[in-house]
Length: 326
Image (tube, rainbow, N blue to C red; front, side, top):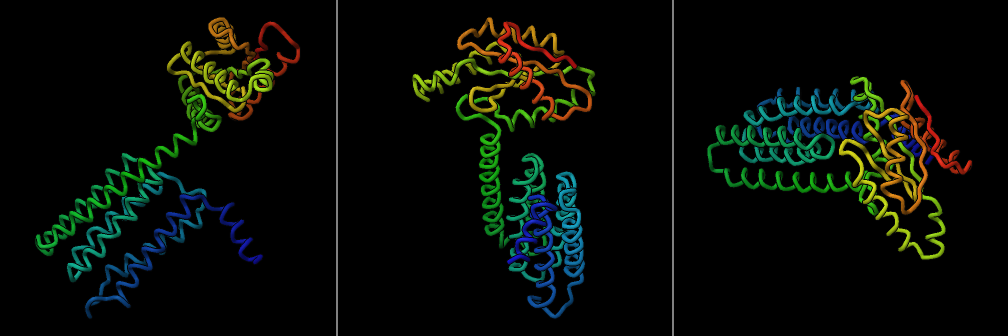
């Protein structure tokens, strides 16, 4: 029992979902190739190509597990290109059409892996290249008698991959958007912030944020119920978004707390923007704090400073928001 716990802790700490899936995929490929070269060999003729593929798969799988969380999506994409270049040509050496179809079934887990872990455009390019080259080689090798089987395999794999890709996109959107107000949630905001910070650095642009909090929102829930409170939040989010720029990022962090990321605005400009938005959206009343991103600052510290300044302004009951310049 303790061994299982220690192993589980190691996996969670040292491995990512990508490294686990890719390493397992490669090791399973090594087992598959080994079985076809030995126990399941269709003829007495040796298959050195399968032995080489098995060795490459085992080496790749072990290397990935050693790398663990250091194994990146870019490395995964490069590896899958290598898999295509090695596995697909091997269909030319299969002794029977049945073995060729058996090899073609690898397209299904290959395409699903690409769709789930890599960008959809990359999955489509590599996946459809795989099935196109594979089908062409099979027809050249064995003739057109198994065209129907190839078509069924291709259509089944494509439909399955596209459905999983659609489902993945919906899951990803749900995980980074707030379902009540239909804006980014904190996770989505932080993800975008992580991309915008280096972009702003390269362009030499300032980056500021407003941390917004509705005044007296608890009383709305207590006196009129949560349904009324939800309507207040939805109306506030919709009205505020009407007065922001397309490049700005607006998010709900939870409860009655929101954030607005202003690209190209320093703290002074962000404070003016906040005051303008308060005039545009006066009901419900709300407070805000401003922080300007500082070089070397983590996204979490950047957000926390704006939150703290908003709270300081509220507690001090100041008419003007508190601003923290870079």
